[in-house]
Length: 452
Ligand SMILES: [Zn+2]
Ligand SMILES: [Zn+2]
Image (cartoon, rainbow, N blue to C red):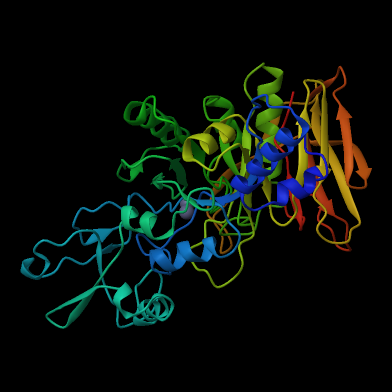
């Protein structure tokens, strides 16, 4: 169908509309007028990020503009337990600054935050306001001063969408980060994506209870809506929930494989799992029990924007729309990346074939990973006492027979055919360099979803 243009060039075309017109012209020229299914293409995005609506550093428009001007097609501004609605308010996650009287805010809308005289996380400072004024002009930021305190208005989602969204080019998906925790300090965070209603902070005795209750609240509140439930950063801050929790909750289909490369607030335990192992432990069990596999997303979860993001996801869809992207992610048609791109990922029920989108000189390697049917599912518990470098935790330790290399291809194209004793297969592509890490910390790399 795409004569005279390689698939790779086609995928790189930035304007889907232009590409569609080109295809139509080709069809017309060749006399084939038949209607074909719309061509799918890859869209790069980030579904986990913060700004001053909760505890992120920049004002919302500064943060969103960053993604729009750095090659992203879609984002979800996912602040903690808050949606960027028009309701007038003065408090949120980590701050509460109501004015002594509301007279000055008569008829006003949205969230207002006080400029702090001193810096520190997650305060709003004059320097943060100034960087936005510098970028968008002095009329871009609204302030009201009461009793010597200056309040700054945060733009609501509706205004941000009007300012930044462009059909076919840049999409803003509503959502938020549902934040909860246990009495011992274990934190359980979940992103609800493509929703606008928010639950308050949730506390329960165990991470599993929080995940279970949060899932049920989502089903109750959002019902038939097209939304995603993303279980965030299992390793942050320090083994906050375990693969056993997602084995117990097979309804959870999506987790953060790569949360901006964050290993946790503390050093990972030498025997403890890392996110890629977490993924394989859950999927070995699910495949062995004929359940749907867990999908792995990459996000940057940035609060400070001082350094470049270390993770994102690329989704294959026919159109840049929230409904289409949510459906594609739910179907597993995406990959997580920290620097490399797949040109092609195809699974025909037996063989997984991948091709690397080569943008700079290699060498490249494709690792096909999975778990065999005779793997050892047993786990042992390591009890870690509270120390200077970590809180007290029980860590599940799993066998080396989970998540093994099934085949290695040196090059940019390869395929793997499932054998009778394989439970599933996934592909990890890396650029070969000295000091290459063997797991999710390798960089640049990208991770396909698992297939069975
Ligand atoms: Zn979080
Ligand atoms: Zn977050």
